[in-house]
Amino acid sequence: MWSAFLFSDEEGRTVGPPTTGMVGGAAMGGGGAAGGGGGQGATGLANLMSGRSTLGGNKRRRATGTALSEAQEGKIKLAFFVAIVGVVLTVLGVGTEFWVELAPPKTFYNNQTCVAAHLGLWRGCTRTLWVADVDPDRDSCGPAELPGESNCSFFKFFTSGEDAVMFLKTTQKDLNVAAAMLALFSLLLMGVGAACTAASLSREALPFLRPASVCFILSGVMLLLSLVVFHRAVLALLASDQAVPLQHRLSWSASCVGCAGAVLIVGGALFLLLALPFSPWRRCLPGDGAS
Image (cartoon, rainbow, N blue to C red; front, side):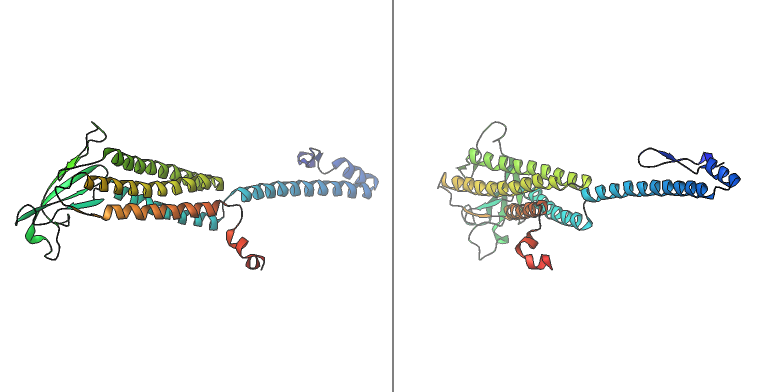
Protein backbone atom coordinates (compact mmCIF):
# COMPACT_ATOMS: atom_id res chain seq x y z
CA MET A 1 0.00 0.00 0.00
CA TRP A 2 2.94 2.34 0.53
CA SER A 3 3.88 2.15 -3.14
CA ALA A 4 0.93 4.36 -4.02
CA PHE A 5 2.28 7.31 -1.98
CA LEU A 6 5.02 8.75 -4.18
CA PHE A 7 6.36 12.31 -3.93
CA SER A 8 8.68 14.46 -6.03
CA ASP A 9 11.27 16.76 -4.57
CA GLU A 10 12.54 20.07 -6.05
CA GLU A 11 14.91 18.34 -8.51
CA GLY A 12 12.24 16.05 -9.94
CA ARG A 13 13.34 12.88 -8.11
CA THR A 14 10.64 10.54 -6.88
CA VAL A 15 10.87 9.70 -3.21
CA GLY A 16 8.67 7.54 -1.06
CA PRO A 17 8.71 4.99 1.72
CA PRO A 18 11.06 2.12 0.70
CA THR A 19 8.71 -0.79 1.26
CA THR A 20 11.27 -3.34 0.05
CA GLY A 21 13.88 -2.23 2.52
CA MET A 22 11.40 -2.14 5.37
CA VAL A 23 10.05 -5.62 4.59
CA GLY A 24 13.51 -7.09 4.06
CA GLY A 25 14.76 -5.43 7.19
CA ALA A 26 11.91 -6.82 9.22
CA ALA A 27 12.41 -10.31 7.78
CA MET A 28 16.20 -10.42 8.15
CA GLY A 29 16.49 -8.26 11.21
CA GLY A 30 18.05 -5.33 9.32
CA GLY A 31 16.62 -2.49 11.41
CA GLY A 32 19.24 -0.07 10.11
CA ALA A 33 18.01 -0.32 6.52
CA ALA A 34 14.47 0.24 7.63
CA GLY A 35 15.49 3.31 9.60
CA GLY A 36 17.42 4.61 6.62
CA GLY A 37 14.45 4.14 4.30
CA GLY A 38 12.12 5.86 6.71
CA GLY A 39 14.58 8.72 7.10
CA GLN A 40 14.83 9.08 3.32
CA GLY A 41 11.04 9.23 2.98
CA ALA A 42 10.73 11.80 5.77
CA THR A 43 13.51 13.88 4.18
CA GLY A 44 11.79 13.78 0.78
CA LEU A 45 8.50 14.82 2.30
CA ALA A 46 10.19 17.64 4.21
CA ASN A 47 11.97 18.82 1.03
CA LEU A 48 8.70 18.75 -0.87
CA MET A 49 6.88 20.79 1.75
CA SER A 50 9.75 23.26 2.03
CA GLY A 51 9.85 23.62 -1.76
CA ARG A 52 6.16 24.42 -1.86
CA SER A 53 6.44 26.93 0.91
CA THR A 54 9.41 28.57 -0.81
CA LEU A 55 7.54 28.89 -4.09
CA GLY A 56 4.56 30.38 -2.31
CA GLY A 57 6.80 32.82 -0.48
CA ASN A 58 8.39 33.96 -3.74
CA LYS A 59 4.95 34.52 -5.26
CA ARG A 60 3.87 36.54 -2.27
CA ARG A 61 7.04 38.60 -2.41
CA ARG A 62 6.59 39.28 -6.10
CA ALA A 63 2.99 40.33 -5.56
CA THR A 64 3.95 42.56 -2.67
CA GLY A 65 6.68 44.21 -4.76
CA THR A 66 4.30 45.26 -7.55
CA ALA A 67 1.14 46.01 -5.58
CA LEU A 68 0.30 49.36 -4.06
CA SER A 69 0.07 49.64 -0.33
CA GLU A 70 -3.07 50.95 1.30
CA ALA A 71 -1.31 54.20 2.20
CA GLN A 72 -0.18 54.77 -1.40
CA GLU A 73 -3.61 53.96 -2.78
CA GLY A 74 -5.22 56.37 -0.32
CA LYS A 75 -2.84 59.17 -1.31
CA ILE A 76 -3.51 58.57 -5.01
CA LYS A 77 -7.26 58.70 -4.43
CA LEU A 78 -6.89 61.93 -2.45
CA ALA A 79 -4.86 63.57 -5.23
CA PHE A 80 -7.39 62.30 -7.77
CA PHE A 81 -10.21 63.86 -5.75
CA VAL A 82 -8.40 67.22 -5.88
CA ALA A 83 -8.07 66.87 -9.65
CA ILE A 84 -11.75 65.92 -9.98
CA VAL A 85 -12.71 69.13 -8.14
CA GLY A 86 -10.74 71.07 -10.73
CA VAL A 87 -12.45 69.18 -13.57
CA VAL A 88 -15.91 69.95 -12.16
CA LEU A 89 -15.08 73.64 -11.79
CA THR A 90 -13.74 73.67 -15.35
CA VAL A 91 -16.89 72.14 -16.82
CA LEU A 92 -19.03 74.58 -14.83
CA GLY A 93 -17.03 77.60 -15.95
CA VAL A 94 -16.54 76.63 -19.60
CA GLY A 95 -20.16 75.61 -20.07
CA THR A 96 -21.66 78.88 -18.80
CA GLU A 97 -21.62 82.38 -20.28
CA PHE A 98 -20.97 84.50 -17.19
CA TRP A 99 -17.30 85.13 -17.90
CA VAL A 100 -17.67 88.90 -18.17
CA GLU A 101 -20.48 91.40 -17.72
CA LEU A 102 -20.80 94.52 -19.85
CA ALA A 103 -23.02 97.37 -18.69
CA PRO A 104 -23.60 100.94 -19.94
CA PRO A 105 -24.79 103.66 -17.54
CA LYS A 106 -28.27 102.84 -16.28
CA THR A 107 -29.66 106.13 -17.61
CA PHE A 108 -28.00 105.83 -21.05
CA TYR A 109 -31.15 104.68 -22.92
CA ASN A 110 -34.07 105.95 -20.83
CA ASN A 111 -35.11 106.34 -17.23
CA GLN A 112 -37.15 103.14 -17.03
CA THR A 113 -35.09 100.32 -18.57
CA CYS A 114 -31.44 99.63 -19.20
CA VAL A 115 -29.54 96.88 -21.02
CA ALA A 116 -26.76 94.71 -19.60
CA ALA A 117 -24.83 91.94 -21.34
CA HIS A 118 -22.87 88.91 -20.24
CA LEU A 119 -20.86 86.60 -22.46
CA GLY A 120 -18.66 83.53 -22.34
CA LEU A 121 -16.66 81.43 -24.75
CA TRP A 122 -19.56 80.21 -26.85
CA ARG A 123 -22.40 82.72 -26.70
CA GLY A 124 -23.44 86.15 -25.47
CA CYS A 125 -26.64 87.36 -23.85
CA THR A 126 -28.25 90.76 -23.49
CA ARG A 127 -30.79 91.40 -20.77
CA THR A 128 -33.20 94.30 -20.45
CA LEU A 129 -33.58 95.33 -16.81
CA TRP A 130 -35.80 97.76 -14.99
CA VAL A 131 -33.91 100.73 -13.60
CA ALA A 132 -35.99 100.52 -10.44
CA ASP A 133 -34.50 97.07 -9.73
CA VAL A 134 -30.92 98.32 -10.01
CA ASP A 135 -29.12 99.38 -6.86
CA PRO A 136 -29.46 103.18 -6.49
CA ASP A 137 -25.78 103.42 -5.54
CA ARG A 138 -24.77 101.66 -8.77
CA ASP A 139 -23.96 103.84 -11.77
CA SER A 140 -24.08 101.13 -14.42
CA CYS A 141 -26.88 98.78 -15.39
CA GLY A 142 -26.85 95.39 -13.75
CA PRO A 143 -25.95 92.99 -12.43
CA ALA A 144 -27.01 90.57 -15.12
CA GLU A 145 -28.54 88.18 -12.59
CA LEU A 146 -31.49 90.55 -12.06
CA PRO A 147 -34.81 89.43 -13.56
CA GLY A 148 -35.52 90.76 -17.00
CA GLU A 149 -36.02 89.89 -20.64
CA SER A 150 -33.02 87.96 -21.95
CA ASN A 151 -31.84 87.34 -25.51
CA CYS A 152 -28.97 84.87 -26.06
CA SER A 153 -27.26 83.78 -29.26
CA PHE A 154 -24.23 81.65 -30.05
CA PHE A 155 -21.21 83.31 -31.58
CA LYS A 156 -20.57 82.61 -35.26
CA PHE A 157 -16.80 82.44 -34.84
CA PHE A 158 -16.76 78.66 -35.30
CA THR A 159 -19.32 78.38 -38.12
CA SER A 160 -19.27 81.25 -40.58
CA GLY A 161 -16.36 83.15 -39.05
CA GLU A 162 -18.37 86.31 -38.44
CA ASP A 163 -17.62 88.72 -35.63
CA ALA A 164 -20.30 89.57 -33.09
CA VAL A 165 -21.52 93.11 -32.49
CA MET A 166 -22.57 94.18 -28.99
CA PHE A 167 -23.33 97.80 -28.07
CA LEU A 168 -21.98 98.89 -31.47
CA LYS A 169 -18.68 97.21 -30.59
CA THR A 170 -17.11 94.38 -32.61
CA THR A 171 -15.44 91.35 -31.10
CA GLN A 172 -12.00 90.09 -32.06
CA LYS A 173 -12.72 86.57 -33.27
CA ASP A 174 -9.09 85.46 -33.32
CA LEU A 175 -8.69 86.06 -29.60
CA ASN A 176 -12.06 84.51 -28.79
CA VAL A 177 -11.31 81.39 -30.83
CA ALA A 178 -7.89 81.07 -29.21
CA ALA A 179 -9.42 81.24 -25.73
CA ALA A 180 -12.01 78.60 -26.63
CA MET A 181 -9.40 76.26 -28.16
CA LEU A 182 -7.22 76.52 -25.07
CA ALA A 183 -10.19 75.57 -22.90
CA LEU A 184 -10.99 72.58 -25.13
CA PHE A 185 -7.41 71.33 -25.13
CA SER A 186 -7.41 71.67 -21.36
CA LEU A 187 -10.50 69.46 -21.10
CA LEU A 188 -8.85 66.90 -23.39
CA LEU A 189 -5.76 66.77 -21.19
CA MET A 190 -7.96 66.33 -18.13
CA GLY A 191 -9.52 63.26 -19.73
CA VAL A 192 -6.11 61.77 -20.50
CA GLY A 193 -4.93 62.46 -16.95
CA ALA A 194 -8.04 60.82 -15.49
CA ALA A 195 -7.48 57.74 -17.70
CA CYS A 196 -3.85 57.47 -16.55
CA THR A 197 -4.92 57.73 -12.92
CA ALA A 198 -7.56 55.03 -13.37
CA ALA A 199 -4.96 52.78 -15.01
CA SER A 200 -2.58 53.37 -12.11
CA LEU A 201 -5.23 52.33 -9.58
CA SER A 202 -6.49 49.32 -11.56
CA ARG A 203 -3.06 47.95 -12.52
CA GLU A 204 -1.41 49.07 -9.29
CA ALA A 205 1.47 50.77 -11.12
CA LEU A 206 3.03 54.06 -10.06
CA PRO A 207 4.60 54.94 -13.47
CA PHE A 208 1.15 55.91 -14.79
CA LEU A 209 1.11 58.81 -12.33
CA ARG A 210 3.84 60.68 -14.21
CA PRO A 211 1.85 61.29 -17.41
CA ALA A 212 -1.20 62.01 -15.25
CA SER A 213 0.69 64.73 -13.38
CA VAL A 214 1.93 66.28 -16.63
CA CYS A 215 -1.59 66.28 -18.11
CA PHE A 216 -3.19 67.91 -15.07
CA ILE A 217 -0.49 70.56 -14.73
CA LEU A 218 -0.67 71.44 -18.44
CA SER A 219 -4.47 71.56 -18.31
CA GLY A 220 -4.35 74.01 -15.39
CA VAL A 221 -1.83 76.22 -17.19
CA MET A 222 -3.97 76.19 -20.35
CA LEU A 223 -7.03 77.22 -18.37
CA LEU A 224 -5.22 80.20 -16.91
CA LEU A 225 -3.94 81.14 -20.38
CA SER A 226 -7.49 80.86 -21.73
CA LEU A 227 -8.67 83.28 -19.06
CA VAL A 228 -5.90 85.75 -19.91
CA VAL A 229 -6.60 85.57 -23.65
CA PHE A 230 -10.33 86.02 -23.07
CA HIS A 231 -9.68 89.13 -20.99
CA ARG A 232 -7.55 90.51 -23.83
CA ALA A 233 -10.46 89.81 -26.20
CA VAL A 234 -12.80 91.78 -23.93
CA LEU A 235 -10.41 94.72 -23.83
CA ALA A 236 -10.18 94.64 -27.63
CA LEU A 237 -13.99 94.63 -27.80
CA LEU A 238 -14.23 97.70 -25.57
CA ALA A 239 -11.59 99.54 -27.59
CA SER A 240 -13.27 98.87 -30.96
CA ASP A 241 -15.82 101.71 -30.58
CA GLN A 242 -16.17 104.49 -28.01
CA ALA A 243 -19.73 105.53 -28.91
CA VAL A 244 -21.26 103.64 -25.97
CA PRO A 245 -19.40 103.81 -22.67
CA LEU A 246 -19.27 100.40 -21.02
CA GLN A 247 -18.12 99.07 -17.71
CA HIS A 248 -16.92 95.50 -17.49
CA ARG A 249 -16.12 93.07 -14.74
CA LEU A 250 -15.29 89.38 -14.65
CA SER A 251 -18.14 87.25 -13.34
CA TRP A 252 -18.45 83.94 -11.49
CA SER A 253 -17.75 81.71 -14.52
CA ALA A 254 -14.31 83.28 -14.88
CA SER A 255 -13.77 82.78 -11.14
CA CYS A 256 -14.58 79.08 -11.53
CA VAL A 257 -12.08 78.77 -14.37
CA GLY A 258 -9.34 80.54 -12.41
CA CYS A 259 -9.90 78.37 -9.34
CA ALA A 260 -10.01 75.26 -11.52
CA GLY A 261 -6.64 76.10 -13.06
CA ALA A 262 -5.03 76.52 -9.64
CA VAL A 263 -6.63 73.32 -8.29
CA LEU A 264 -5.49 71.29 -11.31
CA ILE A 265 -1.92 72.51 -10.95
CA VAL A 266 -1.96 71.51 -7.27
CA GLY A 267 -3.42 68.10 -8.14
CA GLY A 268 -0.77 67.54 -10.80
CA ALA A 269 1.97 68.47 -8.34
CA LEU A 270 0.59 65.94 -5.86
CA PHE A 271 0.67 63.22 -8.52
CA LEU A 272 4.25 64.17 -9.35
CA LEU A 273 5.30 63.84 -5.72
CA LEU A 274 3.62 60.43 -5.47
CA ALA A 275 5.40 59.24 -8.63
CA LEU A 276 8.88 60.04 -7.27
CA PRO A 277 10.99 56.97 -6.39
CA PHE A 278 11.85 58.46 -2.99
CA SER A 279 9.99 60.33 -0.29
CA PRO A 280 10.63 64.09 -0.46
CA TRP A 281 9.74 64.39 3.23
CA ARG A 282 12.41 61.91 4.27
CA ARG A 283 14.91 63.44 1.85
CA CYS A 284 14.36 66.90 3.34
CA LEU A 285 14.36 65.61 6.94
CA PRO A 286 16.84 62.72 7.01
CA GLY A 287 16.93 62.71 10.80
CA ASP A 288 13.26 61.86 11.13
CA GLY A 289 13.51 59.21 8.40
CA ALA A 290 16.48 57.58 10.09
CA SER A 291 14.77 57.51 13.45
